[in-house]
Length: 63
Image 1 (cartoon, rainbow, N blue to C red):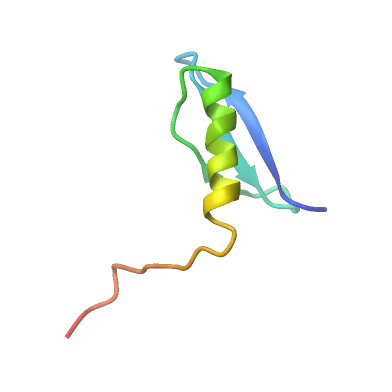
Image 2: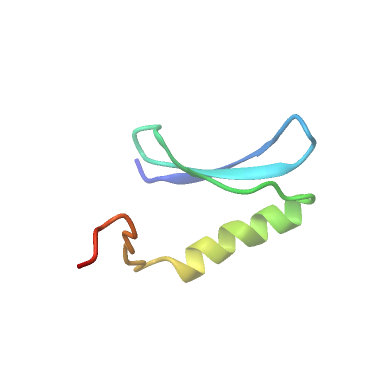
């Protein structure tokens, strides 16, 4: 099964999305959005801007 975005409403009334893997494990959780439309725009931004995202590990020691 493919991953999916799940939209929820938190205790403060804000909309959030989480990215859930095909095995049901949560991969990422968004910030809170005041409207559902803004939340959906956040999902679309992730889809558009991160299809081939690289990893920038700033915890690596530099010499």
